[in-house]
Length: 110
Length: 113
Image (cartoon, rainbow over all chains, first blue to last red; front, side):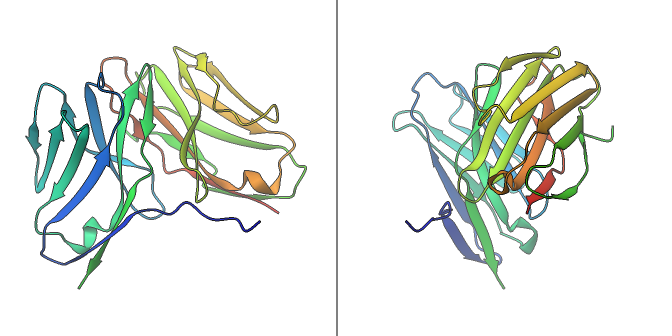
């Protein structure tokens, strides 16, 4: 049969607009999450993290929101810039290892 | 700190050949991870070490893949014999036991023809 590549969710935004990238998780006992950014040709890089005792955490131009009721977290990027173009992953420590979601590709329209 | 260092950055080899990927973790980190990234499967964990000991190799696809960590500053991922379906970007990452954040290398892009 025909092989199909992994279909990454894609988000396209206008430069200067805010971006919201979403991630769902399944384990209600999960207590820590990390967002990574992967630019083309590079390895994933840490952006921001959040613990389950928090609903919101802010960094420089980025905010992560955690909704434990629906097991959902989001990454908000304010005033999106061309340099924000990348694939964004949420990740969760499970035991000693870090498990990644499938990722979302963010593209910026000029 | 130079970060996690991987070599080579690119490797092109013929099917059936042995391939060895190398990784130097960040000094002081006691966890080391090998990931593989493809369009088909995304970012997959192959194996990870703690204090040079393999802890979980359930992600290693088959016996053709092996990984070693002879000391705290060096690890290898070997594929023997290589096949075209092994073509991917292989990442090494490390972290310390007190910090869940893993730091990634630049990756090795492997092409098996």
